[in-house]
Length: 175
Image (cartoon, rainbow, N blue to C red):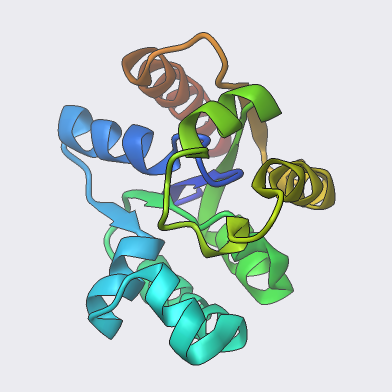
């Protein structure tokens, strides 16, 4: 039976917000990979990318995946690029049930356009970069066990929807 609820999708899709809500409402541990990396490194994601590079960040991300899969069952909010590493994808699929929080480009852009802490969106045309990343990553996100459309739903609605699907999925696996 899968142990963890794993939230995957683009930056700005709501993984951290929904994960935090689920943790509080359902009294389960919450593992936010990006926040865990920031705490371990005592630096923001943007600072880590700027000073140590993307490769270093992805290595730290993999270390955190190993750490959380052996932690008590809970909800894991992945980073937008976590699944780009095949090892991460394999481990998370093996130890959890993956929900792809699918958000439109318009919703993602409305949430991210004023953020200064997203290093992958630094540059001349951040909206075009976001669109390109979404197209590149969508096929990876679609390996999730279930897709949940985010647009038009509140954090609470998404949390309850995820929870009900999670309960059904775990009942099927154990029954």
